[in-house]
Length: 65
Image 1 (cartoon, rainbow, N blue to C red):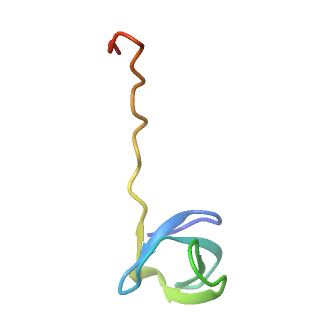
Image 2 (image 1 turned 135 degrees about the vertical axis):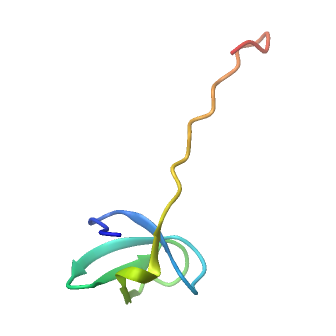
């Protein structure tokens, strides 16, 4: 995976969602979105993209979509 700045992703062996702050040769610096604001360095083979979330359809007052 080749993440870009501001991509949201998961890191193997760590809990929560992270955001990419920089990418270098074979590594990325990521910061957790929850918890203490610290940056960690991880190998690119340890990151997994955030699954795409589909927007829910809104129902009107009668319950129709």
